[in-house]
View 1 (tube, one colour):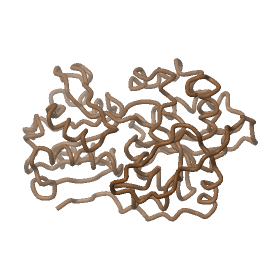
View 2 (tube, rainbow, N blue to C red; view 1 turned 90 degrees about the vertical axis):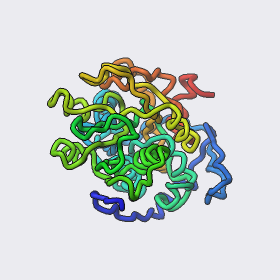
View 3 (tube, rainbow, N blue to C red; view 1 turned 135 degrees about the horizontal axis):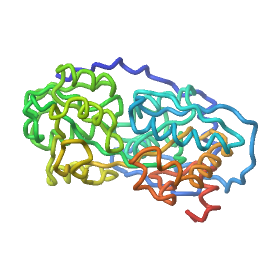
View 4 (cartoon, one colour; view 1 turned 180 degrees about the vertical axis):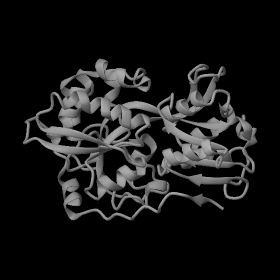
Length: 354
């Protein structure tokens, strides 16, 4: 039986203003067509004429990320520190959260303005399909502003647990992810590909990142799967604090390919030997793109400025975290769904998109 050690998220209803705002927005960039199978989305995404930038009165805009030791929090803080020096219409306030699912809930309830999410969850939530169908009240409620880095799902285990590969997980106490719907869904799909019954063959938990790592160190968990930019700071910290006390769990190519078939936005990547102190072997892992999203009715001037000043100062921002080094400035415009009109306007001006 699954033990959920996080509090149940409050079901959040979307205000009428956001719904009406979505209907008034238009978009011509990167439109996607949801798969027919299992789709509850029947209308086409809203379409709008090209936006022409004009600054608006400056206000604070909150940005949900992850735990304070998470890659998303660190990256967002680095971006905000730079962009806030230039933006005329916005001051970005970075906030620690439990991750993508909470970010989405807070945005759709009007309690937060921006949030980090991963590609599969973004796509499914935008079209209101698959595991995100019950997490959004309607399709097409948000857009992507930036795609800043890749998030790599991998697992750390206590050395005294005897876990070295995914074949060793039977009977173990494993945190399969945080409140992020995609994180634990992917991890549990990977575990299931080895023939394990996720409900009965392991003791699995969903926790916040900070709680999971604390329980791992206390010996209450045997392994923790997290999805973040590699190296994950939380993993690095415990490995450095206890040399030889932890290892990174290795999956094999065949099982990763099985998961990618069900989650096509994922790719297989390699975490090189030496990424973590004392881990002298390569580890295969699952990578997903991580994007900043915002409700469809966010002022276009704000997303224009976030896109513009991030793009123009990317070389400086890359110093924030090693996970950003693989991202070229043009990659910032990549998205599984339509870009927000303001961001799209800037990337057209920069000739990054047509």
